[in-house]
Amino acid sequence: MIDELDKMLRAITGFDAICMQPNSGAQGEYAGLLAIRNYLRAKGEGHRNVCLIPTSAHGTNPASAAMVDMKVVLVDCDAQGNVDVEDLRNKAIEHKNDLAALMITYPSTHGVFEEEIKEICAIVHECGGQVYMDGANLNAQVCISKPADIGADVSHMNLHKTFCIPHGGGGPGMGPIGVKAHLVPHLANHPVVSVNNDDQTNTAVSAAPWGSASILSISWVYISLMGGTGLRQATEVAILSANYIAHRLNEHFPVLYTGRNGRVAHECIIDIRPLKERTGITEEDVAKRLMDFGFHAPTMSFPVPGTLMIEPTESESKAELDRFIQAMIQIREEIAAVEAGQMTAEQSPLRHAPHTQADLMDANWDRVYSREQAAYPAEWLKEAKVWPTVNRIDNVYGDRNLFCACIPVEDYR
Ligand SMILES: *Cc1c(COP(=O)(O)O)cnc(C)c1O
Image (cartoon, rainbow, N blue to C red; front, side, top):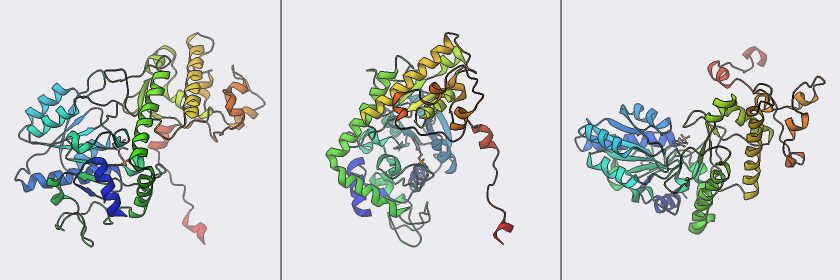
């Protein structure tokens, strides 16, 4: 099954080989950069240590570069969210003698297909560097374009994002990397079971030769059942759904970045900052209010603070997308009430969200809005409602103050 999945992933990405060892995208980045470093050393260019990373990158990119001792040089993005090609060219030329790699996400974390992607890869190659493509957004490429054809030397695939392995709750995941032939001799190997190449001095990146091998069967089943036609349709629907949401929401919440034709890729970023300035309502208020409508909030304040990044994927029906859009439009209307001075941000249902059953049962309900608006802002909630169990928590406090909830050892007596 692993061999068959290997073949499927090669067909999808265009790479010559797949290394099935990394357990996550981040570990794939590490494995890919190690292969690049080993390749450069073998060529006698081990001094190359500069890694160019656009400011739109996921935080794991600079972290992985740091783990293989590369020096991160940031590349600017333009007002449309694209990599600033002139800045990239200047920095690649400036570091020509010590350039090791570019890490680039395609389509980008800003939710756009960089039109200059091939040019960007060519510039890096001309300056002696390798191209690491962060493949976390491969769901917008499958059966339409291939990372290897675009110019990537190595790229990871998040099988727990693009290929159906349940995603969330902390894993396990799988982040195999695809590489071009010249990197194959430098891929991670394993001291017990030789994999990828014959050189067992290439160290392993995880404990097991094929990572979390058992869950590879999920991606094997998914790809087998979908087939080429089904996978292509999934990609198209994912892009279509993101554009549908962007188009419908744009007049209520401005979409931050779009391509030349006003389209997005697989996700869109909506900007809450102008509303926040005018009304004091924050992106967190919007995220928490969505819970009252039964929605898990989209990604908040990444990659741009004060925004929400919405990625519907291929798996939601049009009815579900419409429900989400309706919820967002109603939330916008609630913000409008604050804008119009009908209530303050502090008094609004947005700031008090999410609402629990205990809130509603309180005999001393003294809010300026009704209980019905709090808990049943939309008609469909009367039929099916997921009740938030707690009110808003202080996320930052929780992150900064770790405490152990284990029972004391004595209690086991
Ligand atoms: C998810 C993601 C990663 C990291 O992948 P993990 O499997 O969570 O380690 C890296 N880059 C981008 C753009 C991502 O979205």
